[in-house]
Length: 544
Image 1 (cartoon, rainbow, N blue to C red):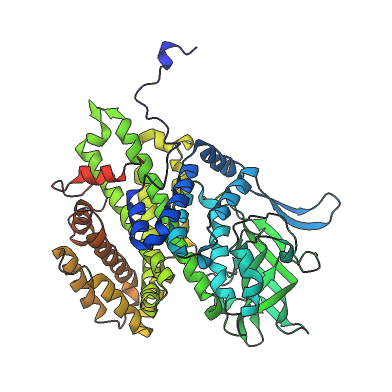
Image 2 (tube, rainbow, N blue to C red; image 1 turned 90 degrees about the vertical axis):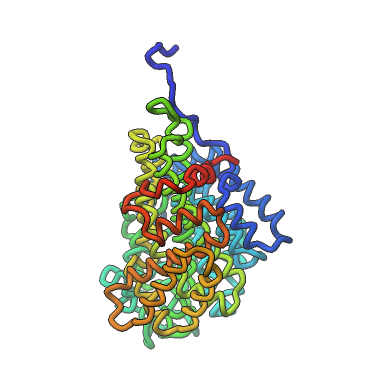
């Protein structure tokens, strides 16, 4: 029996056993906005079930177990045979299996699949972000494989399956398969054209032997990998199966696992190819063109992942402050804390709204929407992922010392928060990609301006930001040095236009004042006190 000195008071109840989807008003409204009404009942049922599972104490415990027991590399068996396998805690497999069963690799074959998947991805990130890596790459591999109809016919049914099969065996014997990706090398990084991995053609048409080293290869226990290598006619995309058709292991030498800041439940590795069998995907010399759609899809997942991390950080902060008392009142009712929480909530809602709009563009598939994605995806990837770390850190501070303790879950969010900005092309890569689209694809800028123009006249600060943006876009000569500034403005204006059109007035008003009108400081919690901040915070409260 606890003594009187150990009576617990003024502590919030655990944020557990609630519906992560239903409790997120910005997300639920975005799904209703972008999905065909005929799909809503089914989609809402699926997402609510996932939301309840994701918010359960059981899955939260699995997430802790997966992070506290990171993967271990096993290069040889006890007899000395090379096996190159990675062992995961059972909780990792349980989580990954639930992610596959939730359709996180099935977007390409379901009506409204990208919006449904985006919402699920955002929810699932809040449980454990590490297992999103293989789910993301499997999803993103589909458009690359579709450049080769035979490969697509062979692999797409397995990649879009909702069955998780963890065994290493020939793909033809599996009901579901996962994919990884290997592009970067130690000498080149993002400059994949500097890759030195060599591909030597074999006698059978379209097959090659690879020799080289990949500096980053995540999810090394996947069934197949899309990799870039130098063929006789230049950089080319290849499919490397983990297990060959006869059941033998392909040469896939895992040299070591990376010891990462966060994302610790996921295995990121260095691999060696030494006579590794591969099949060409697309034409020789067009590897970047072949794999670019995969890269774009994973970049959108970086946006979704950061939006999910921000949502969970904000939910934890608002929940804590709703119950915690200080200086005679609930923290959430204190004007200064309310300002901080509202500012964080704005960032989270803007990220969610933008991410779901981009997912809807994938579902639409029209030339206009594809052109919008060409600018909006790298701009969103640049900006949303960069906003995630300060949001996570500020949310942890809202919990005080409790937020610095592992049991709160906030340290895991903080460690995870920089990752999406680094993966799939860091900030400069995204900003330069935006410039490339502006200079080479005028239809992309036209689509962007038409999108933000739908909100013109609704808020004078948004109108002013659009005007300033047009002035900046008028001169693209020598613009590389200010590419980050321009990309940031493109993302902010797009977020502002969407919130003005779709968010409650108090949210749109606060966003336009702080992000477009300059009426805020550099830190969170500096919004104008005249805004309706209580409503903004209440909207973000995780109550379903």
